Image 1 (cartoon, rainbow, N blue to C red):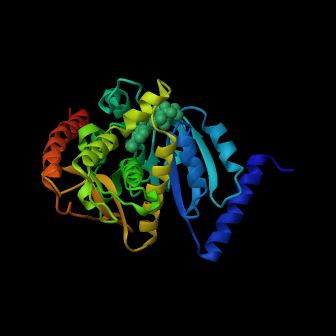
Image 2: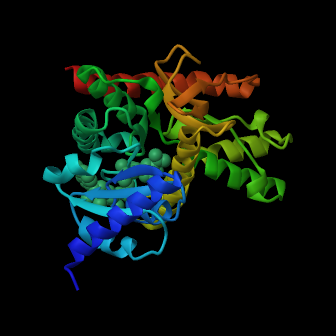
Image 3: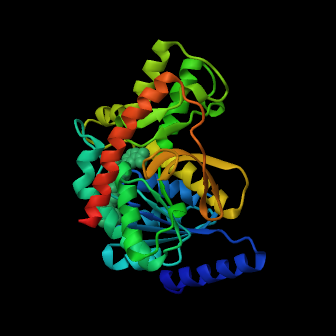
Length: 338
Ligand code: NAI
């Protein structure tokens, strides 16, 4: 037998040729932080996604182990592992979509903002790699605090002259996933049939579920609204406390991230009517970034959709959310500009 690496290369070439002949090319996706609590199940789910032809798994620890493991799954995507900073550029070269769950998670008693000092630097370094190796890739940013890390990424890209606001998306999908689940519980229906828009940002009071716009149309008592809003805003903390020091949401997050990445890939492929909530550059409010429904397309964000009619409760909550968001956004911007 030829050595494994040689066999792998031959097989990669064969499969690449097949694809170009068949014309059914997929997308190249990189996960940065692929050996982490979110990264590992996310890698598993992306390896199962038929839209993915090449999957690059990058981390500063344990990337070869995770890659060997995932690569034995008999699904279409070719998997390659990259370990440590010297391999970051190879991990990123030619990618269509880069998903970033790199960084430390919360422990009980911490807010997402407490992660800023460590994660801001990690996100900066990774985005500098994107500038160099795949400036046209769509970026899905998961690392917390999302309300600050998305502005950090934008500043890094602006500084390099590669910024395209359509290609930078903060992942708030888990808030929607939770909202759908909790609302379905209250209504006594299947969570797959529920769609709750969640706008604002991804931390505490900045997470604003629009319960007046739930699909299918329904109504709630004031007690239900207060319970649901509170539970959706604190869903992350619920998991952090239950895990008691062992981290934050990883499995539900990987599910949400895979769902969101899949929507981005559907958009890149040119599918019509792909709409999800995301924290993006926005003119929906006076803030430079805001989470709301966006229509995804061949270039990333095709259109940021308006908030729609809010009731009095939601308008009051929106004002609260905007105050905190403004501070978090400014903190991210200053981190790069200073
Ligand atoms: P984890 O600690 O289990 O995994 C993080 C991974 O990032 C580790 O494997 C670590 O080696 C890697 N890493 C650290 N520095 C790196 C660097 N410079 N380059 C590449 N990889 C690096 O953490 P977990 O639970 O996977 O969470 C990751 C992040 O996702 C945290 O910041 C967490 O707060 C955030 N998160 C975001 C959510 C959202 O809704 N957007 C929900 C849940 C978590």
